Image (cartoon, rainbow, N blue to C red; front, side):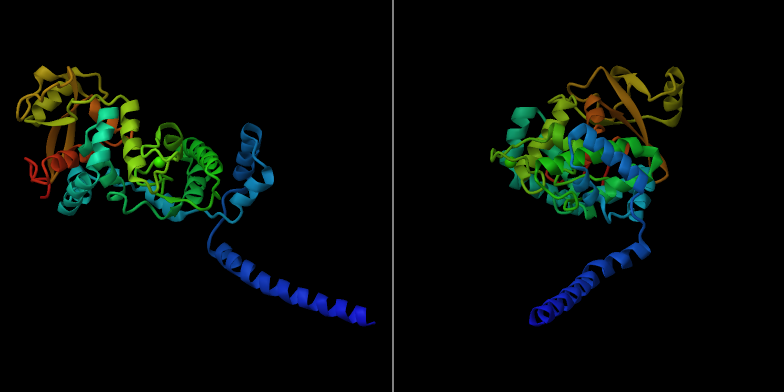
Length: 346
Ligand SMILES: [Ca+2]
């Protein structure tokens, strides 16, 4: 009897504990489910199947990783309206501000040693590495607040235009977290799943990030040295040519542009450098050919010659505006923060 009563009391206590636990664990989940839809179950199941087959994942662990991950409508909103759809004049106002220039000059000063070392090893000048980090994360200050698993899951399974691309990144992300011994839900990044000081996608991290402070770990999240080395290595591996120009302003009018365009094949306009009307003469070591860029600023057309290194920056982000912002910010940083010849801060 006594034993029975003891067992009964224990059972009652267990039930009470379970109810308390359920309240803690389930209520927030139920509340979240009411306002959020989880990732498409069939797509996730197919993906998990592939990861099990190709990479030897344990199915239950991977299913656990995806449990409760919601579609992010903010991510979908952001990818449909990227800043890169703006006119150059508006884009420039966001990314080239006096504050960003000032802090970039400080970044160059503070990280001079490692930036110099990166230039020696990879041939990429300090101001270009600094400009990329400045535009990506405000010199490491804004590394992104989106859960990477939810962002990549949303884009891979709920954004058909780029589903294949982001499914590959999701695969790379899971491999990355496994290699680093991290829970897939832990890392944060941009709405597109880019991470750390240089905002590398997972595939870029696994292919191009380097340990540049020699501590045996490739840490683009905390180590500025690894971040700087990784950006320089990325550009170098994509064909950066040391000492050559990136972009140079042209004194071109719309009618000359249209004429040149007629000679071209309709794709991007490439012209032999000696034929181009540079504002200050062709830059030293200019490539034989340049792309002619027409950018809209303040309702007027601006013309620029973009050299091969301009195309290399576009491997980081495929927008002309992005590459131009890196080039212009880099110029301003190199000049120690003095105003550019075209008055960037207008
Ligand atoms: Ca390191």
